[in-house]
Amino acid sequence: MIERIKRDLAVVQAAYGEIDVDPDLRWFVIRAWALAAGWNRQTTRLLVLLAGYPLTAPDNFYTGPDLLLANGADPGSATNIVDLAGQRWRQFSYHMEAGDWQPEKGHNVQTFLLGVARRLREAS
Image 1: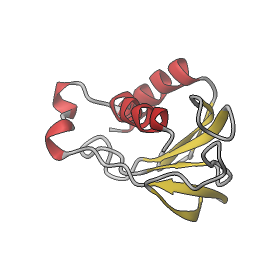
Image 2: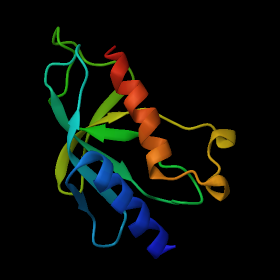
Image 3: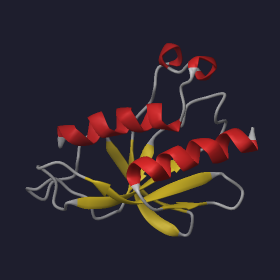
Image 4: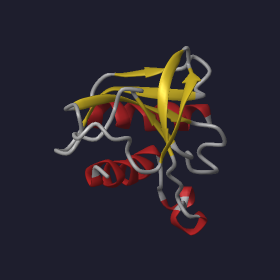
């Protein structure tokens, strides 16, 4: 399982640039996630927890705490500011449905990140 996580994270790094990875593989951070128009910044840090992965999909995602909509409002489905991995993060509620997560058919962290990308394109 550890080798699978390492391979999947190599794919993430190839797709999104530099990442930071917990030595125990409990989480990773994409250092500069590009954002669409509608946000108060062009990039943000993005943290994903890997509890239960790959048997279960990651659950929720986290951005820099200062990520807001362009008008200064809090984003929808952003629930809390939390401390994780020694830093502050804005928690976004995002869940893959059980039937949408099929690791035996090749679903991986990239599958989850495609959903994150859809959510962050909404800027609402």
